[in-house]
Image (tube, rainbow, N blue to C red):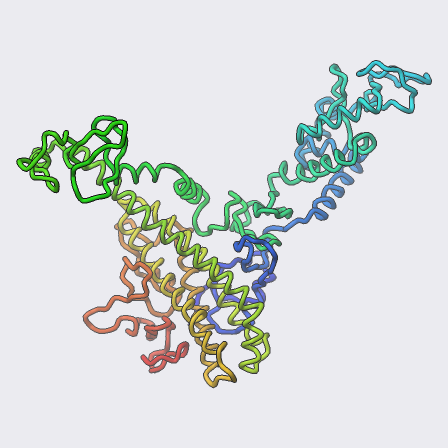
Length: 592
């Protein structure tokens, strides 16, 4: 089985364009697992337990890395502009840590920059030479060694400076652009004065603000959004996928800082998250499942079979659930407790069409949202369970399996790779349901094509998950080496590769906006089906497939095992494309 996107996985780990979905290797070399590294940590958030791929379009920064970068930038600016490091740090902070911006502005108009930033070339007030001076805040007289001044020369006592600095630091990050206390002076107060005059607690706060400013004011860097994580990510803007993985193992989208959601765009994710948390669905439920009391207008849900409704106190109005008329006007002549002739007559006359239409629309909207949300949430739960199973596999089961089958753990990496693939595919599949929810109703062909690709990927994932979760237990519980363990190895590695292909195809199609749906509302069959399936023969799943693992059958026999134009037949069990003469699948050993 060959694919146009095949590449050597070892070389890809060193490539700057390496990406999880850049293409799959259809071979079954278990060394592919070297491209993944599962990172254990003690976080309570199971999302932190994810696969780690070596990416080249971003760099994870620790606090020490941030310090080093700050020092390098300050040293570069102070050297080029021939100013002190304190002045250099003030300049960089003012221009959001952009070295190039500082260079451009400084050499364009140095005087304008100095005035804007507060870097004075000479003191505004000469520092007196007397033994005693008066503080400009408390107006007490102090010896010269008890007074300090910024570059402007305005003297203030150490106590007043400490109070002024402490107040500014406690007010927030604005302390990084602190100016002289004199109301008429705009001279900047540098980090050297903070270090000399602030208390230990205030200096720690200032240092944290200073470090955070390097990340938060720089458009190329962001903090990892995982709870309790202190790492930042430096991203090469315009370099491709926004999905990044922090050293804490949390994967997120650098663009919107939500959890990694490729192939769904950030706008769709934002709408979906808002919908999940908004009150709109509550109102839809109320509209679809309740009716307002005709008297007090409070919504009422009917919980019994009788149509005789009594509103809650203090209203206590009795009315008919169907026609909302007063119950005093009802009785045997109107149909009794469980029917309403007046309602049926009015409905035929069209009196209740408007209200019923609104209620029916709300009910349909709620059912549609529930359909997608349940599958979104179910795949999230499955992913969490797979993460837990992966951790247990790495910490407990691999060693046990190695002992049972008399094989070194290095030869069992194909199992870890399978679980990593399951975790990643569950994440992708979860977000495809939010994508499907927002496909416009009138684009029927696009919806059918999406459901077809989603169904193919989901059925492949279910086969892989079943094999890794259930069939592996036989070998874990075995008391000695199993003769067919190598066959299991081949099957699991093969299913991993096939599933990877299916999800690569799904991701590629969604990122292209399902462009394979042509202008006439159908799919382009000239090569698109083969390239999208990633196998030699096209799959026969119905376009409306829901991922249940079922396959459609034509009148001529099982379409999965039919021979395509290239002379291959697709296995009904694992979808592997076998050569025409073969009668047994080379992947899963099932008969044709």
